[in-house]
Image 1 (spheres, rainbow, N blue to C red):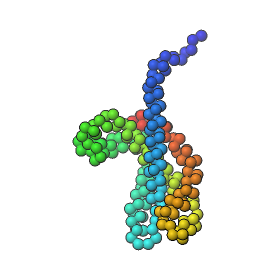
Image 2 (image 1 turned 45 degrees about the horizontal axis):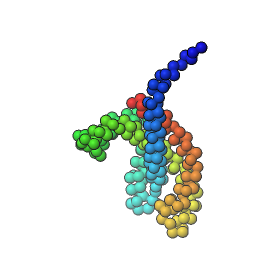
Image 3 (image 1 turned 90 degrees about the vertical axis):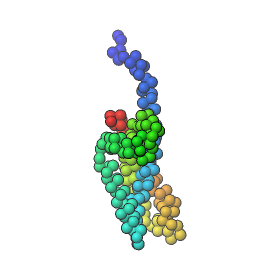
Length: 196
């Protein structure tokens, strides 16, 4: 008895399946790298503080509050809405043949027609992932006992050096497990971008 499944359809579209799989892998790798870097910067920015002087207010109002707004926005809105906002509102501002902020002219026309949807999706998913990863970094950094930082500071390290040499290496030891779950959703998020 013949199989009711029609394998010839699969073989006919096999190159498209391979191309789609390869594009998903490229996008996932780009989003993991960008999301991790964005998350690290935002996570450190979220806990940045100074105890005295004008730096206290500069860090609070110029760094902490914008980071909180960013994280709240990207964690509080649906990813599909973010993809649409970035594709139809942000990307035309940045890459536009008629005076884009980053790229304009013929190069912008070529980028938009060839890679427009891909760039929008990678940017949206990276920004979204960065918001979630920033909370992972923030939690990891805050889980380290304050005595570790104070000991590093008493040895003459600056705050940034203590953060880089003492706090971050300890705070990111459990990053693999927590971020693994976040990054395992990236291929699923990529399917949302094909719906826009």
